[in-house]
Image (cartoon, rainbow, N blue to C red; front, side):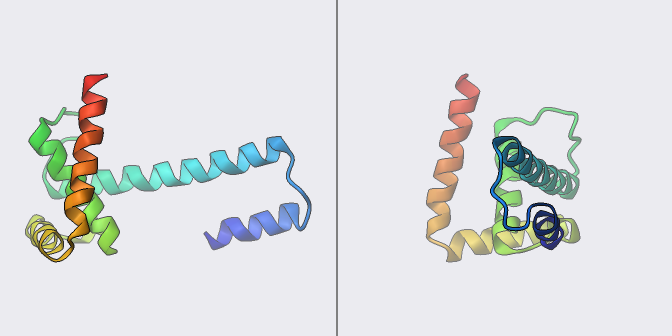
Length: 117
């Protein structure tokens, strides 16, 4: 983020970071990433007409996760797409990208691990 870089250069210049400053920097970056991820997931829920307050079954969960990640990795802003466009995008990526099958397997394994905890 250009704004973050400017802030860092203004605040810290060429100085070394203390542990507290580094912790603050990492926490700020984590918060920015989390906020962006939440926004993408909320947009994906909206595309599929899902209520974020209602639990999803496994099939619905996979649909949301795969769609959100496919749009993100393909460089699309999912909030600008219709459900039909998202489904077509997913089908295209799954067909044309041989690595996607491995990605889906990794996601599924992670889901299984989280569900078993």
